[in-house]
Amino acid sequence: MSTGGRECLELQLLEMEMLFSMFPSKEDIVINGGTSLSSLRSYLEGTYESPPPFLQFSIFVKTENLKDKAELQVHLPHSYPTKEPQLFVRSSALDKLQHNDLNKCLATYVSSLDRGDLCITNAIQWLTDNISSYVEKSKNSNGNEADAKNVTMTFRRMWIYSHHIYRQELKKKILDCAKRLNLTGFCLTGKPGVICIEGNKEQCEEFWRDIRYPNWKHISCKHTESVQVTDSMDALRLFQTFEELIFEAHGDYGLRNDYHMDLGQFFEYLRQHQSDHIFQILFGIEGKS
Image 1 (cartoon, one colour):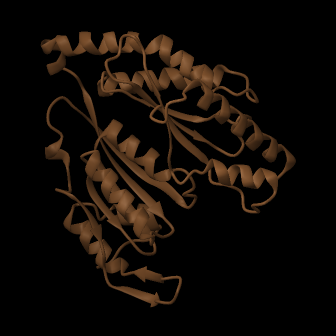
Image 2 (cartoon, one colour; image 1 turned 60 degrees about the vertical axis):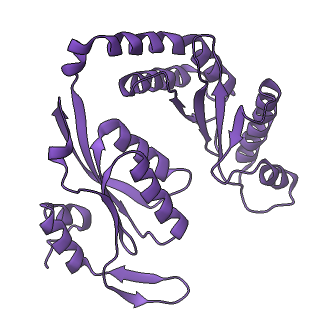
Image 3 (cartoon, one colour; image 1 turned 30 degrees about the horizontal axis):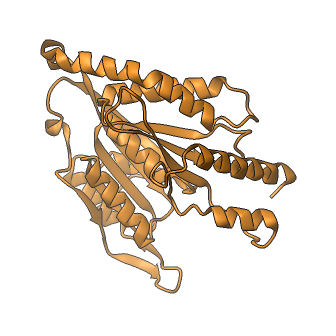
């Protein structure tokens, strides 16, 4: 890693130490995503050669007007603070629309700060100062039943392509995340890997955000379909559940498990779910059963 990269990691460690002094309770800062501060320290001290995982943690912020703490999820790329952190706020006091508005405004605020300066404490202060106004908007919105009936929601279907999906822990994460967010669709494991999710737009975006990070490089969203609705989305769903697809495979079943799924069977599955047109979008060729 370059000298500049090491300096960024040193600043990240310094900021983490400051945050732990601000939030001494173990319940207020939770390290997650395989992150280890000890591995970061070892790398900076020269006793660990491989670059450490990206720092991922949650800070639970308490304000006077909130019954429960708001969770600020933080993902720091190795180049932070020269690059913006990825932040996302959750709160039981906010509805889906207010979550979306709050996170957009937080992202705008963080983008306005000088790059190169540590900014997590600034983001915490901004959240503490501003979240109450979003809670009030949520209460007013929920209190007006007539307006609630006319709320327009966005149904979304996303087609995601990956070079491969092998690891059991990754497959479990995909299935658990889809179930938690009430999404339907499928995950085609093996090589190539394909994921389809459908449901509420915000939940689809949360799924996409959660599975991509911290380090899934060979993955992309190939196609997105969106429809505005004012009532139930269930009639628009092409899939009734979220399932893992396992078709016949061929290839090397050695240590790398480098096997290819039978794309003919996959095309037939898509055809049965009125989605055979997606095959050419995913692979660039016409499908055949």
